[in-house]
Amino acid sequence: MGFLERLLPNLLVSFLRRKNQTKGTQGYTKLDGPSGLWFYVQCDRCGEKIAVRLRTTSEVQRREGPDADLGPGQHFVTKTIVGSRCYQRIEATIDLDSRYNVVGSTVQNGRLITHKEYEEKDEH
Ligand SMILES: [Zn+2]
Image (cartoon, rainbow, N blue to C red; front, side, top):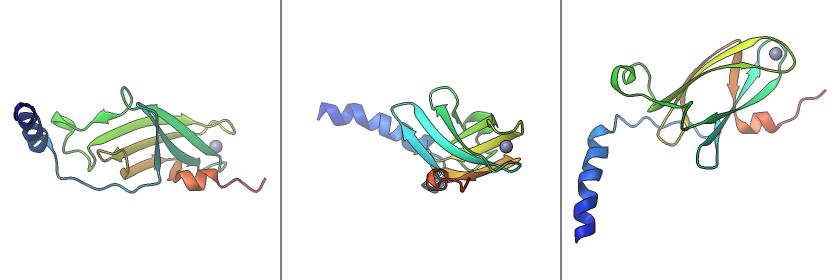
């Protein structure tokens, strides 16, 4: 059982590192390939729906060390988004669980919408 013996310490380490597992809400993010993650916001000023693609490898940060207790998720993202219809800057802070589902979010000048809401086309 050499395989298990090698596996066991890793499992133990990841178990010990695991924070209280907060379950996120599905539908707000969409994985894209090995390191892509989409989320969607709507501008408060003009109503534009904006899709934002992140690289999980560089733009999604882990909550660990001093950041660990500052939010509910295991990962978090801070992003400034500017749409194409107006110059409103949308400031998004999004907390994500280990599967990149949204645990919580703060969006200034806009709101987080689901992929489904994004796909629903505007009436004009
Ligand atoms: Zn706008």
